[in-house]
Image (tube, rainbow, N blue to C red; front, side, top):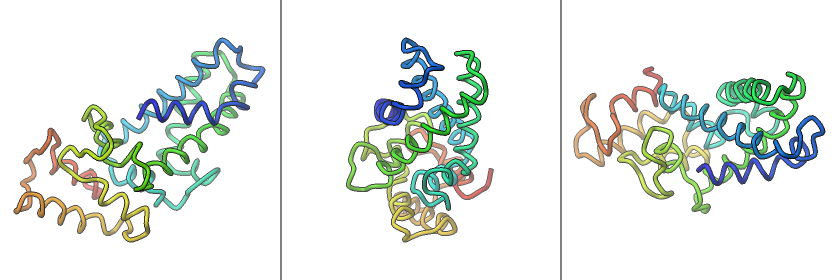
Length: 206
């Protein structure tokens, strides 16, 4: 995930960072890496706090704000943006207006590109399992591999408009029940994940 994210940042940073007179050329790469850290840190914080539902809505594009300025209104993206602005100001001595301009110029394109890759079942470079498995501490499993819970079945259905967020409980229950024969208990673990706790976060229990 890190390599793909950095590539997206580089693709979207030509004007906002590389050609920005407020940023010396020797700091271009450091600013990009700061953005990378803010994005991955923000996504990981959401995952580990239990907001799997919000993350799946964002990554599937099923969030009511799919691109551009609308994407910036997503609460997860807004939190990432705020953290990125603060980090850039602190590390590089850039004022808030300039830092905000950089983030608002780069972040929508980066996350839009990430969403396009993850939600596209024909793009094998990233999928829901690899992203969410990595964010939940699974070490960033390769695309196509699951840590015991198949996020892809839910994520691709959301992306295709076949499900909405209210369908997650039913689908999640059938996935876990089908995998185990019986629904797992609240403290049952599979593949290093606490499925009871995960479902609690997925369906708004946290």
